[in-house]
Length: 109
Image (cartoon, rainbow, N blue to C red; front, top):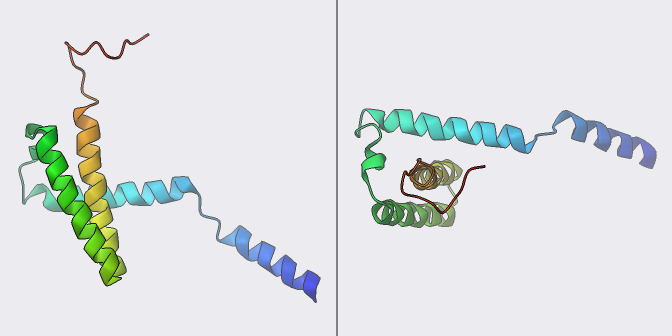
């Protein structure tokens, strides 16, 4: 009987195996959906006109909203706020990933 239970557990684990790639893909899809939803509400690429200080201030606001959602325990709100945080992190990342003609801190080989 023990052996049968172990075999069943192995089979169940095989069937529901979710990879990090699956999670990242689903999360990125959520990020895109949120950006598209906001597209008509705000100027597209409006974040690109903001400096890092402003983006960081907005990120901190989103982190506070995420913290409140976690306290409330409402999973939909937690997911929504986590995506907002990720989008602001992406904006900051993108601003620092733009080619800078005067930036010599990274030498490309």
